[in-house]
Length: 172
Image 1: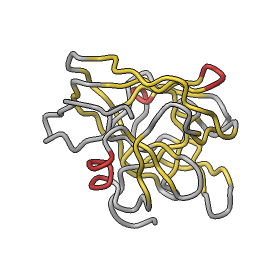
Image 2: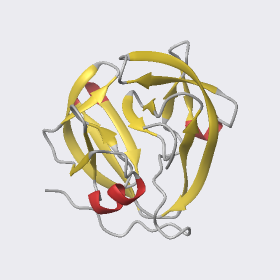
Image 3: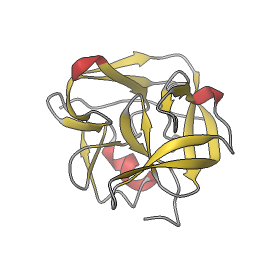
């Protein structure tokens, strides 16, 4: 199994983030880089209870410095660059990350968090796609971003992969 090492952030290493060039799905199904989004912008969110896509407003977004990022490459040339703690949706109630212990602390509402490995299936806007490669890519300090809170839902699509906000209370 692939395990992540290092990866600290000035805020204590508990921030989970995405590469600034990560595309976030918008309500018209176009995409916008997360670094260009701000509170008040509308994105496409997902409600797993009703299996519906919703136009949702960003309430809070943050940027944090990180020294380690990882690239997950899926089938059909889908990829995402993220910190080891950032969770992505697997099947049923499972979430995956590269540093599960920290993910469980940062996202206590994720019912089950497992370590990501090649061959696992990740939920995307196109259905489930298998991970074909995991690699550590950045070692220099880099500004990363994450959506902390949305107005209605907690789930959103980053590079077409289903992920979740860092909101610690409210929506479950």
